[in-house]
Image (cartoon, rainbow, N blue to C red):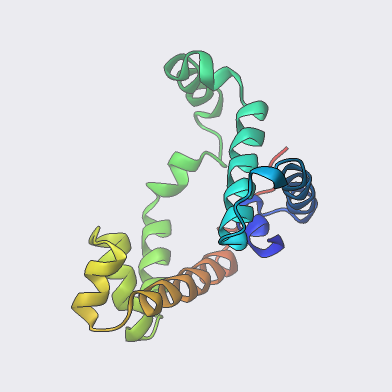
Length: 161
């Protein structure tokens, strides 16, 4: 559970809190659990807890998302850490392309099919002629390698307040 929480929060303290919150919620709801698929049940609780935490942190987005997004866009315009500026930066594009090209073909192909081509895992698995789990595993590893490449190039995740 901790590994999944880390992937959702990208922060050790938040992940620990999320796991603890999940276990408390599971304990309180144990009488409603049918006994089948405990891992899926716990991970669903974890995911829903994270969604609720995010909503509580950003309640203004629930009222009028368009107005709030416009406000956020004007406060970050011209900021060197503006996510939009980073994404449209040609240097960033070249770095992402280099990260993709640095992947071995067996990892690059699922990224091209699923992330770039929009295929489902099953469609990509059929095209590559491997099981769906293999596609998922290769995607995970490819994304991890690309993330590491981008972090080395200075495009790492910033710690949120």
